[in-house]
Amino acid sequence: MKYPKGSRKHKNPINDQSYKQSTQFGKRGMTLEKEIIETNKYYLVTDLAVIHKKPTPIQVVQVDYPKRSAAVIKEAYYQQPSTTDFNGLYKGKYIDFEAKQTNNKTSLPFSNIHDHQVQHMKKVEEHGGISFFIIRFKQHNETFLLPIRPFIQVWEKQFEGNRKSLQYQYIKEHGYLIPFTLQAKVDYLKVLDSVYFNGGDNNESRRQKS
Amino acid sequence: MKYPKGSRKHKNPINDQSYKQSTQFGKRGMTLEKEIIETNKYYLVTDLAVIHKKPTPIQVVQVDYPKRSAAVIKEAYYQQPSTTDFNGLYKGKYIDFEAKQTNNKTSLPFSNIHDHQVQHMKKVEEHGGISFFIIRFKQHNETFLLPIRPFIQVWEKQFEGNRKSLQYQYIKEHGYLIPFTLQAKVDYLKVLDSVYFNGGDNNESRRQKS
Image 1 (cartoon, rainbow over the protein chains, first blue to last red):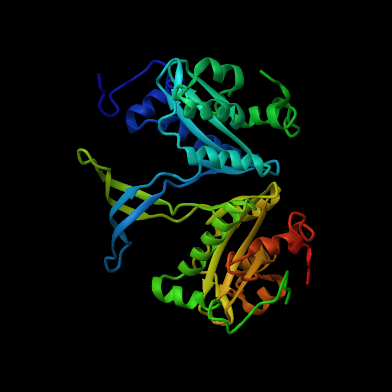
Image 2 (cartoon, rainbow over the protein chains, first blue to last red):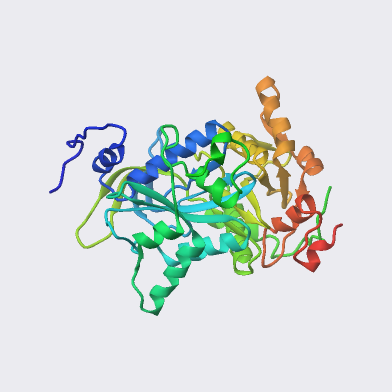
């Protein structure tokens, strides 16, 4: 059953934020993305990190230039991104990641992930950056950080005829559950601290591993 | 004037590519941007650096979803970028820069540079990244790399009533002339090597300082 715009109401306004938003915007991936953007704003104002979402690439075909007002794009098309959704800087390190969410309970399908994106993320690691996926299983209400290396191990096997998806169990084993806080809804820096920065050094609370 | 490496050849028809292109595209800033994008492609395929242009931010207002074909954006507007044009990764370092060109002989006007962009670049440096402007004076056929710090010294004085532009002489004194090569039309990594990486260490030719 499809719910029209804004008609769904849940009991807990905070926990169910994701459902509300996904209904409102009606686009897959929108909720997680918005929560990460909000988290990044929090990181920015608290001077923890400088991480931004890249704009969606759009191919502009026709533009009108009306007198005395802004240019109006009259025909344009969404393009496939050549890199990832998010990048930036944390503790002097280049950070690069892609966010994906799924309604599937047991796996994340590889649809919507493109090989050139994965190759870009691999290159980032080779050049000394930190690259990973943020993956949300909406049915489990769990969000994981999965480093690019364990991702690639499964990704490359699809070309040998293996399945075109990442198993939930595999992500649980090789990824890290991202904690949720009110200020940072997808608090992935906590995971980066424990995985890439040896427990962190700029914040007491970041030393606690979950 | 500081020359990071190699000598520049003038009166060379290849060098005048910028004039040709700017006529062809007829848009301010287009030529330099295109040359940097090409340079980045060369850096990428030669595995020197992973640096990309961010897509232009566009606010989509109306989209049509025709059956059996791609979504068509019917109404959209260009937005002011919240960060810079280019970012990426070089020798393990986060790189972030903005490109500007001018027909003016004596200065680069501050129009088209926004304070939030400058604040972003300042933050990048504070967090351990490398941030700079690439500035082309078309009339001089010269392209400079100007680090964010000398830029900010002048930028902030405009709010005390000083002029809203960066003098050519100042850029010459505090910036670095970017060499031109056939493969890398705006070979700014050479400047980064000599300014930020002590002469470079991954390429023989990059060790030569002039």
